[in-house]
Image 1 (cartoon, rainbow, N blue to C red):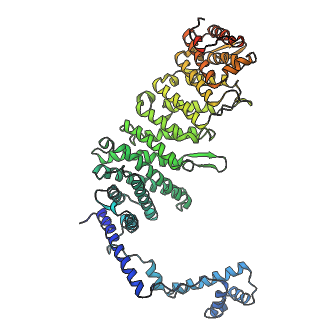
Image 2: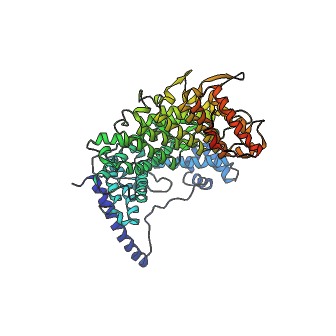
Image 3: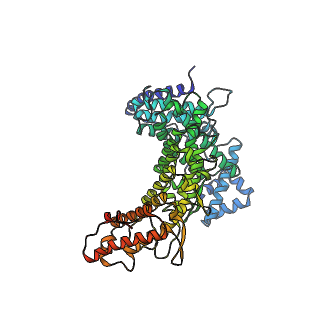
Length: 592
């Protein structure tokens, strides 16, 4: 006996052949005789005049028994009906016809048998209930015929599309879909997957691993979509919300495309690791990424200035989803045992990231979500034990999440009235990238605390404090980014640079004092015109800062040492006013 997938594939193949034969026969027949469509004689649109004629004619007895209908009919005859009264007369007419229909009469002029024949659906086998698979089979066959008529070579048993279709049908047959969503969920996923596989033929081959992958992804996400829709109905008192359900289906389709594409690339590189021999365990590893992504898109609420609280899914494009899913699969590929559903590793990481980033202004929050997610997940994959040393069920103990949150909190913190950091998206991501790499190799940036705040927090705060004193017109964003990286490199070697000292009556970080010292010689009130002209260029200034901080690291980070180094630099910079040769390289070796 043929299995269900075989029946569908056979039906599609037969449908294609039949469609071609019907097309040829239809053309010949149309040439020879008129085309007659066996359709019932539908009445035209109802209006108050037809209702009036009915109650004056065959429905007059009914009008005599109902004073309201009688009044409306007379008003209609006198052309005196108001718009609402016209609608009311039509409603009375419809109610009368429905009443007649219940007693065996025609409904709106259509004989009952014709109405019944249009809506009557026979069971596949007498005396048995139709399964979910049987209910959607007709839709899937139609889609398959439409697709493979346009792509006849794709139905070959060795093609990736054929491999996909068999795996897809096997998965759908096992999914218990509720009556109301059977056709939509299955057909939407089938369309999405056929398009994805056709656009990326390298994803799947004709082997067993490809089929298992498609089956696992289809079964997992179709069930997830169904569960979300059922939850929506429960929350709305069993009625449901059409708009919410459509959003879930749309987001599910987008995630399905991404998981199939990016999962296919990663999983089929190492099918033994992902698919193995235990089908249930394999499905959990493969499906966790898609399940986590869809769950967060549906359930995470973020703030929008215009709409208030909205689901995160409304902020994510297909490319954003692809970026996050791809990074998630990289993390799973490195640590498949850790990222199984029981631990919910991907969901914990993404959920915490989305919570953190949605609280910042959108130019530095959700706009960089895909890139930051990718950075955190990729570094997590290769440094899991180092950057998540505590309870891995708690995202709050993930060091890279802490690092990115600390960085973005300080970048988005309002500054003085005359200065704003204003990093653009690319530069903000570059800074997070640099910091995430540092923390992955040196966790003490986060784990080491001073007054309950991490070393990273103090280093960033001290650096940003110094940059606030420079007008945005004097120093571009790229140079600010370079200075921040140089400052963090210096603190990585000299942790005491984040110690606070009372300097000139003000308590400040030593890193702030060091940066202020070199900055004052270039941009301060005492800086000469020649010094500014030569040193205020972005590349020159950033190099000068780098050499200055290198000297601090090498010679000492006390207040006295920083002042001594400043004096050496000031003497060299003074040569610019006397026309002597000036060399930044010489400053690296001049004794203090």
